Structure formats: C-alpha cells, structure tokens
Image 1: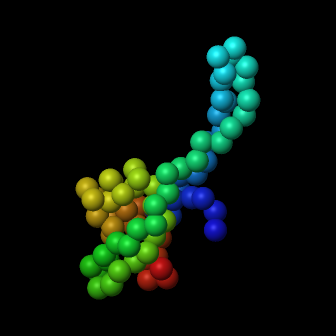
Image 2 (image 1 turned 180 degrees about the vertical axis):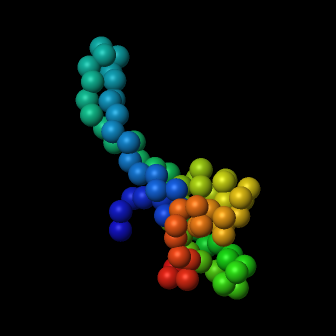
Length: 78
C-alpha cells in the first residue's frame, strides 16, 4: 500500500535538508497519515480509511460523502 491519503491524494514531497554550512542533501517529507474509522451515514456502516491529518480536519467540516464525491471514490468497496 502506498503512502497516500485516500481522499485528498496527498503523498511525499521531495525537498532538501539544509545543514548549517548550507550543504543540501535530498530528503522526503512524508505525509502525516492516520488510520481512521469514519462513520458513513449513507451506507449505514463504519469505513476504515488512511487519511492525512489535513483531510481529517476537512472531513469534519465538509462530511465524508462530499469529500468522497469530490475525490471520485466509491465508498462501498472500503
């Protein structure tokens, strides 16, 4: 399973780690993924998703159905 948010599609970002002497080495900035069980009222059941913390905050505001529709995800397969 890839390190990717299932609702927003966020994934790792390439960046530089810059030392005090300004020497730059490549590093990956990983997404803060959390395994979350979310209640899906339309399906009348719990759905387990791997979400970024930003997606969890947005989920509380918009709702699961709206975010899944926006991402083009069929929740019945989860």
